[in-house]
Amino acid sequence: MVRDTHGNTAQVAPWGGRWMQLAIGIVCMSMIANLQYGWTLFVEPIDDKHGWGRTAIQVAFTIFIVTETWLVPVEGWFVDKFGPRIVVLVGGALCALSWALNAVADSLTLLYLAAVIGGIGAGGVYGTCVGNALKWFPDRRGLAAGLTAAGFGAGSALTVVPIATMIETSGFENTFMTFGLGQGMVILVLAWFMADPPKHGYGQARNGSAPQRRQYTPQEMLRTPVFWIMYGMFTMVAAGGLMVTAQLGPIATDMGLIDAPVSILGLTLPALTFALSIDRVMNGITRPFFGWVSDHIGRENTMFIAFTIEAVGVMALSAYGADPVAFVILTGLVFFAWGEIFSLFPACCGDTFGSRFAATNAGLLYTAKGVAALLVPVGNLMVEATGSWQTVFYSVAIVNALAAFLALFVLKPLRARYVAAAASAAPRLTTRLAD
Image (tube, rainbow, N blue to C red; front, side):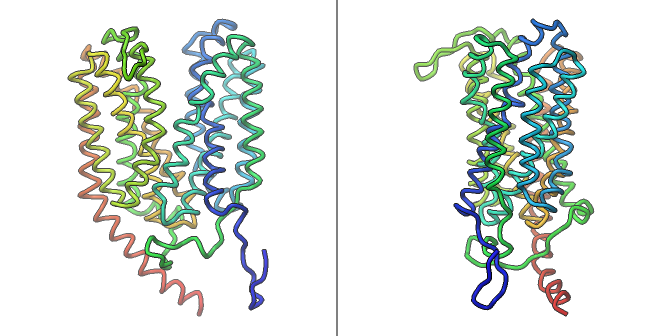
């Protein structure tokens, strides 16, 4: 804190400004990505040593997802109340502790406890980094949220091979301990440089103005129909995407494609391996890309385009997915049109309800992912009832088409009214406070 020429207290922007804050958030997100995306590499080694069974071991993953998702609003409240630094510090420490416990876990109880601790820590880092990006970039929320979410979506890409290699050479216990402590240490160091934006100076719109507007509290947001429209759409699209992405292995198995060789651009891999590799890349690229697009053509217009592509891609996968090359290309298209929800919806939330409580509000919206995860088993029930994946594909396509319609013809006009009302309410609030 310093004083200006008039003797008033003014905030000083942290070193590197808001772009450095964004970079810190991206790196921190990359450091927690392996807690979710790297887990699959450890399942077989854990089972080989302890013989607990895949199903029992994977319960730990479910526990991690639930705690990582559903506690984000609470962690977001702490960010809005006390700032990002303390939450990320605690989150980084918990993430490191989680993998350290995995390294020494000699019972399922301890493995599940580690999952709870890791979920709380990862949720704290995730919610803080996304919320901080929304606050620092009110003029580029789509791009900022997309780049931050891309750190989580593709952050494990560079460490997949090193982790797999260390598991083979040094054992999964040493790998858990080494990468857990290393990733946690990076977060702990970077957390000290995180900061809230100054109250003035980072609120400019794209035309350079800085209009005052109403800032919705979480309680006020939850009472608005526009929030629940967004929540429903988020749940619908997330559930549809998870039904396909979570079942990609079984889909490939039933289509007889797991070991089918696929050659694209001189690279030859088994179809499923190729598809999973494309998943990581597309899951990262789509978030900043569609976020950037939405900054220029609007959130709802971008949602309409992305959700329509998703619906078409899933239908094409249903019709042509039995061909190995088509399977790889079309799954890449499906992932590309799905992962953007983790940038578009937080940006849309910040646009609508303001920056003041952005971390809490975006965290509440993010719980839609948890609801969607609970709907994923419906896909398995459909397959058991029909003996085919076609019903799942058709259902996912219909859900995405409905979400595209809602984006353009329900959410867009409704949200426009709320944004206009928030802007008009701000001068009245300012006048009352001055009086």
